[in-house]
Every structure is written in C-alpha cells, then in structure tokens.
Image (cartoon, rainbow, N blue to C red; front, side, top):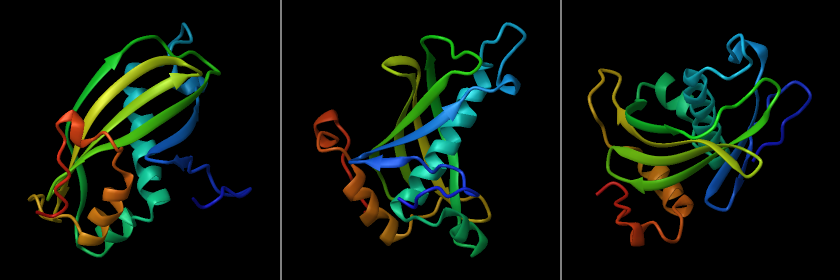
Amino acid sequence: MTPAGPDLPSQGRLDGPEHRYPVRVYFEDTDVSGVAYHANYLRWMERARTEMLRCAGIDHGGSIAGGEGGYAVASVAIRYRAPARLDDALFVDSRLMDVRAASIAIQQTVRRGAVVLAEADLVAAFVAPDGRPRRQPRAWCAIYQRLLPPDAVTRGHRPQGDA
C-alpha cells in the first residue's frame, strides 16, 4: 500500500485478501432527510475496487491508456440492509472471489462499524478498447491468485488465471 500523504487521497489498505476503503457520507451524498442515496453505494464500491487494484500493484489506468484494455462492470447484484446517514464514517470491504480468463468476481460490503449497510456481488470483464472481451494480463492473474481467499475453491469458485 502506498501511504496517503497530505495531498493524496486515502487508498485504503489490503488486509490479507481483503481491501478496506474508508468513506465519509457527505451532504451531497444524501437526500433531504440525511439518508444516503442508493446510487452512491455503487460509487463508493467503484472507488474501493479501483483502490484495491492500485494497492495490489495493478495499473488499470496505464492499461487503458496503453491500449491494452480495462475493466467494465458486466453484472452487479446489490442488497441494501440499512441506511447510511449524513456524517457516517463507513468502510467498503472488497474481496476477490474468482478469477477467470477475462473477468474477476468481487464481493463488496459497505459497513458502519460492524453494521452491514449494503452487500454486492460484482463481475468485472476485461475488455479491449473496442469493447470486446479480452484475456487479462498474465501478471495481473498472478497477483489475483495471491488475493483469493483460502476458501474460494470450497465455495465453488475455481481460480483459472488465464486458462
């Protein structure tokens, strides 16, 4: 993890196979009653996934700029459990669950302390600049293998790298 400096935002941190990303609920995130708007959970999760990649040593932006491709969300299922409110200090926990030739599956949880506010299961497909699926870089798959939780295979997930 690269530490956040006075002029850099927090990247969160990798804690074993899980990435933890801090979020504060601001006025702009809420409706008039002070409850966070549902779409903001997706924004917070997107930021957390981006920082998880950065902390793992993956240059997603460089891959896009270099014409190799990048991730696009292929599917997301989100369950809202409790509301986030103005000024809440939250964490988005992200955990890689599966690695395939051209996609990754990530499980994410937004929480306030021990209280789970939202949970999501997401698949991000690696796509070429023309939008077609493409195999992920081999080096990234090697990094992902180290980030998979020990029980990933027992849950029916079979890490396949770039097979």
